[in-house]
Image (cartoon, rainbow over all chains, first blue to last red):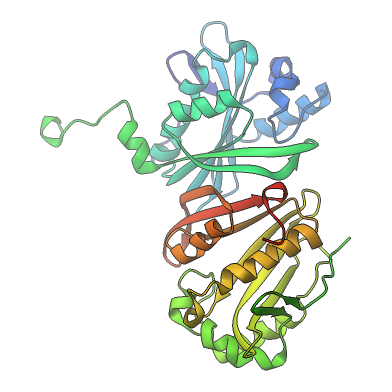
Length: 198
Length: 187
């Protein structure tokens, strides 16, 4: 396996590890009700944000099942932190991974998440050899659902009232994509053998 | 809280009762078959394994903590023949969630016994145990199982592909569910 270099560059973003100094930048969006409503671990106060950044700072690579890789979405140029994307290696024998993400609502809708998640899917399938990647999102979160469909993920599950989440009945969607489906929709197609130099 | 149902449950043609020590051979009759084990996590059971399973089931008649199972034998009331088993598992106390499951002897398929028994167990879950949602899972190839879920009025909530390994191959799984307000008790 070739070495992985961070940051990962996309058109407009650099995906990099979190640093201690990011607490202020992350605090700008992490505590907003619209963001923390969908987070697994709610961050209501500044101390929660510091703890969240501390956890994300430690998530630098996938070495064993259960590990998570979390990267800050940093815009090239002004270095603004727009949000974060994570890849969680949930199962080794069956090659399963989960993507998690959050974005500052001020930057939502600009295609940044599409860019970052595309890079993460390339990483999951291309570098880590994962077989299936899934995303869980709240049923009320239409932006996430549309984004998943844009990435070519299939809706696999729609659970209704299967749990309580922050005091309300939860509605949850699962989207998934297999490695062979991702290759089929990838924008870069490998050249046929005869056109290759080596 | 817990849930300690009055047993047995009597339906039109069936008695759903706790297992007893005398049930081992009747259970072996279907759990010992490869075609029955095909879509179960267990392989076909030996007589010793059946004895152990029955031993366990004798005590599974109530819930006192999340994860507890009520496992009942389905018996034809007229002939006292054991034709299968059903389970109701307490998945969440807070969110009042339960999971239902069943295994029936293939010789007794096609007469509506499973529908009758499962329907009584859903009644028990919603009325007796005050559940909010009951779900069931099965292998996508197990058509007789998911058709039963549909007959019961359960909705297909999930279709997972290759999300896990099952008996050496990729697993494909359906999840069906029904909410309390969707379920018509006594149907």
